[in-house]
Length: 423
Ligand SMILES: Cc1ncc(COP(=O)(O)O)c(C=O)c1O
Image (cartoon, rainbow, N blue to C red):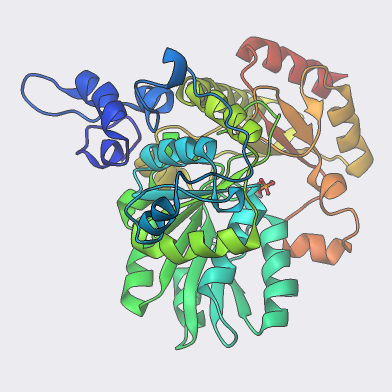
């Protein structure tokens, strides 16, 4: 199940009528109706076919409030006869285009965009959880998600339980009558473990709890968790969706029914995006599928190169047969993404840092998924203040390097890594 497979019509159901035309025309073949592919969807979905001033691009609509023609128009709006918003904190036209595009890409009924990935998860969990509720996480996860749940949700009486990634017996055992949601990343960061989504959804359904997948590293180009029955798909759109290391945004995809209360709370919490930011994201998304092809290719070829290099102890990449998740990844993913984690053989943290510092193309920075390759040492970038035994719990070793392969030429990146490892 991938973004370019042959499927029925939900994605275009989310589009305005005019843009339905855009995708459906290309989608119809003589014998059957074919769903538009990921690239057509990235370029056209969610947009009106005819825009103001006959412009091909959406203009940036800067307005903090929206006017009514008359008192009757306000009453019509309140009675929901008009699909619009009255104030910028509830959304803006540029956000709406991007939300429809992202929903179409993820094959979801709806998508709600936030000002960052973290704002998105906070918005969702604050809507769905109340004092006394519990959630269960697989333990390999973005360290700020863990921190929000453990340090902050706990102040509101929500209990977070963590179990070993992929251990469904442990997750089952951790669920009780108060559990509302089970949560996982797939693939995880930085170990790139992939979750069996069929098993994850089956567990959620059998125990009557909702399911949430952080699919930031996969993107809808590589995996479509909604098609497996996952309730909520979360992405940091800062990463592959924006794709140019120039914006922050986050999105939650799911059914209209489940997201209604989430959208209402977003209107109160106010973590929305400026129209300028949404223009950048819409523009970045136009090349999403094309970029993903290159990220996937660079990721796989560089992982294969590293695996054979004598200075490398281990490579974590789900597209390698040596990775624990290879079978799941092969079965469920279109490609394996651009993120690679590797261990430098017999290196302490300073020798590992020397490899990072010797790279000439990847820039040293956190984040991932942009056109520029980035490289970092998790120990230094995210876990420097942790004690060695705490780092060991999270599987962060001194000789670990994480590289986000951008869209530079594969051979250039390989040559660069080679000189950095051999210098
Ligand atoms: C896997 C994953 N999920 C979520 C986030 C949070 O996203 P943001 O930085 O847009 O708030 C990140 C950020 O690095 C991430 O790597």
